[in-house]
Image 1: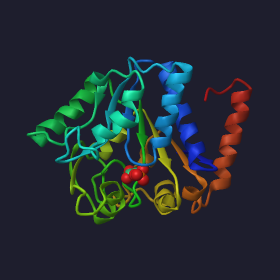
Image 2: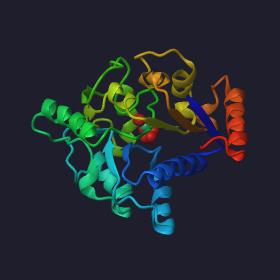
Image 3: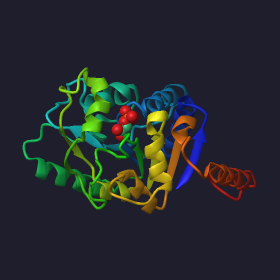
Length: 265
Ligand code: PGA
């Protein structure tokens, strides 16, 4: 896993946006896997700026979101479809028909989840999956104990996740207990992953993910099995990592190769 430690959340957002933008420029028909939550907000703001000021073109981009709360429709202000519309889609020139978010009000969840997986395949698979991380080490809503081979399905949220997300709903009681989520196995099939984390509350989960053993108790640790993961995190999220000096040396070595034209970042 490649690890980049930035000084603050703003720098994380800029770096992450540059990474996504580079892919969109290189491959205008790319398939992006998108995440919700507080962490990617700054990255979306920067992508909107790049669209407005530098003409970054999303017109042929396809997107798949990681998850959605069961029971919330697209007009519910806490639904992830609403989040994506408000924080990204309506500000850029992506074609809404090319944006996919699981339907929290599907009539047959099993069929809907299977179709979601099928649609990802039909679009050629996900080129770059953006990921936040839960304080319990989850990616998407793959809570501790989720199978590392899991596919899109329903998942019951842990008490910790319900507590973490209560800030968006006003109270814990209002947080849905079930979500549709891509599985760990689904995520591992994307060609590249971009893991973002900021703040003290993520430090333990980040340490477990990057330097701990691969375990279903920290589903993000499954990313160690993926061959192309970039983690962009801030100082606070990085502060428990033991091998920071090495991560920096890797970046410096790579920068030297890039400058010499012998590496394409
Ligand atoms: P956050 O959520 O970005 O709001 O911290 C991350 C997650 O739960 O995956």
